[in-house]
Length: 234
Image (cartoon, rainbow, N blue to C red):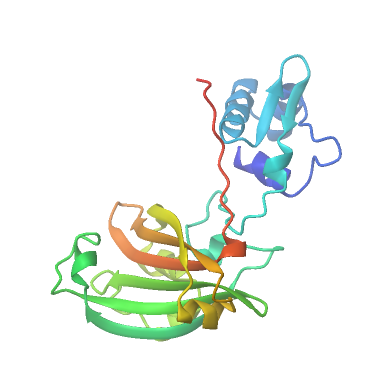
């Protein structure tokens, strides 16, 4: 399913906008037709393809021209450096601040720690080429990464976690919204006073269920594209 999805996003079937029949796909991937049926069902459930009775399986053109910078693929973590792309490029990172402080009381419950425990508090700016698009503020309990260094935050943090802790950041619970831009937003993201920002805030979890990071992200409104698929079918 993931391989087919990647082929679709890479434009492999763009000329006809139609997938090969199940028998051909079965031979191509060296799996049973029942496995292909399940893969196609999963793709249909997420809106990537639709099946037209008697005609075959077609690619949803809206899915193909998805212009979101969020591109999660099989085997990737949920990190911005690893999963956000534009024109095949990953965003650059500029560290704006890095401190050690007691956990803010309102976040202690979310991170399952005490408000007397210490956390890393940091702020990073994300950009593609010369265009900054996101300000990210994060809080990580020190006991999870006691050796975290400032330079690590100029690269992929979640990939660092995979290397050091041998764990992935594979789950998140996020709230998505919008708010007026602040003075910092306008300065760092090059916004007018009348332009808003998209907001994402919530918790990222390690693959064993441990709350790893509380993050607040503020995005330029023109980078805040969210796509979903709704179906009433069983």
